[in-house]
Image (cartoon, rainbow, N blue to C red; front, top):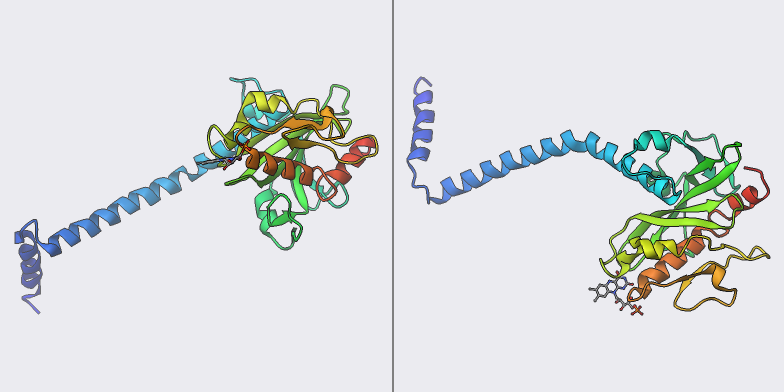
Length: 269
Ligand SMILES: Cc1cc2nc3c(=O)[nH]c(=O)nc-3n(C[C@H](O)[C@H](O)[C@H](O)COP(=O)(O)O)c2cc1C
């Protein structure tokens, strides 16, 4: 026992005396380096998480301001966002629910939770499951009535799920704007969904005809219903365009915001 420190010292000394090219020394240095590097990366990721969450929230708010047409670069985003009223919507009734607090409600988690979502057998938007509760945003006019509603939507394009918002005017039928904030379509092709000139095509388009039938269409040629329901498909990106067509028609239809838009038209919101 008394010679244990000697033995330990001997091991360290023997290790230090090894050639730098020796296999044990190389393996030891590589493992030590990996450990230190992974500890630094993990600590940085943990330290930055709150900042990432703040930035993600700010990005979401900027997108909602932009699609509603009230974003002013340079202004305080949180202040400007205070103009919106957030509500959790029950898609089945088309009415707001107080089962959930909109400040706490996590839409993506709700879409995964069997308690708050359904699996889609007929799934034109390619989303697998759909939450029956969704956070939406109201913008009111000066007299307190609804000016616009901002509705989240998502669906599969060619390579990725596109997440975005559609702004609909208070008539429940006229599109004010559409914008995606998260997708992985190809730059110059499918990612042209972000091109301001293409986004501008959505403004003023109608969702449904006078019979209440959903007519909005993204395609290469106008639908029989007419150009007021038509957004030209992106050239060179027919598949992403088809995805956008399918997801917009899904979310604005009966299984999406259809009941809510009927309530809005009837003045019940
Ligand atoms: C590398 C690569 C990336 C592509 N990315 C997209 C895309 O993001 N969205 C899309 O619709 N088509 C994309 N395409 C093209 C499709 O394969 C297809 O040719 C196109 O959607 C047809 O559109 P068009 O009928 O307007 O020519 C890509 C093709 C290649 C080779």
